[in-house]
Image 1 (cartoon, rainbow, N blue to C red):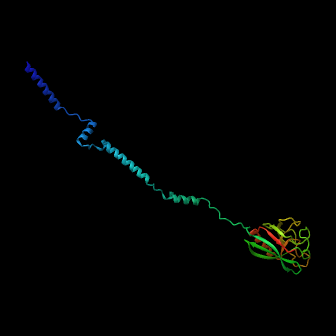
Image 2 (image 1 turned 30 degrees about the vertical axis):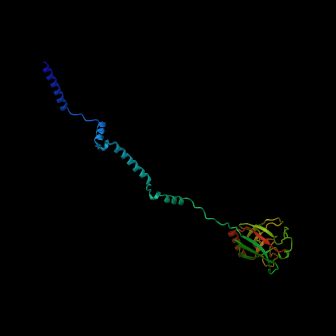
Image 3 (image 1 turned 60 degrees about the horizontal axis):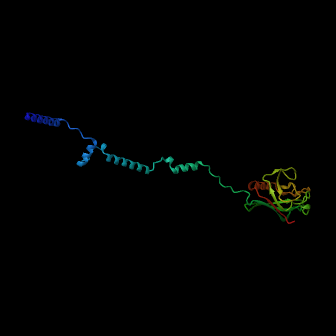
Length: 248
């Protein structure tokens, strides 16, 4: 009886061993495989499963990205800084060239000479200055031969105009008297005086024996073409003033 039991047990053990050897072995888990490879020194799993390789790739990609940021982007020629600056500069309105004021050191003077005309009327020089330089001298008369010594500040005296500084009109006006001629350039005394309606014009009666030689106080050119030259000077240089300086 004991022998049968023993034989039965041995038969069960043999069957169990046979079943165990014939069943397929299960594959180790991913963690087990990693541990097994580490123990065996054979850590050569595929790159897709290699955490260390994945980290290294990410770091390399980041470094490559950083390098591309350090390299300046190539800009088309039309958008380079130099071209943009030139376009902005060319599109901006240019400042006008500075214009020198025409009235700086431009002025006129009236001074006496030792000459007289054929009727005894004194000749005075009208002198034109541009930028401080004398550019023209013209013979003129003021007052009449018989009125030279009269009160020069008294209205109606017909004496030469008084000494002092006068402002000069920029353009002439039409003459309103035959003895004034066609054009009359007004001048205005910058001091107190009784004289009015003074100006520069041409004397149609110069050296004529008609009793009208000279003026009633204005400055008169002896030639009509010379008046045109004086008016052109005034238009061009716009004199600051006329300075009258006669000895009496």
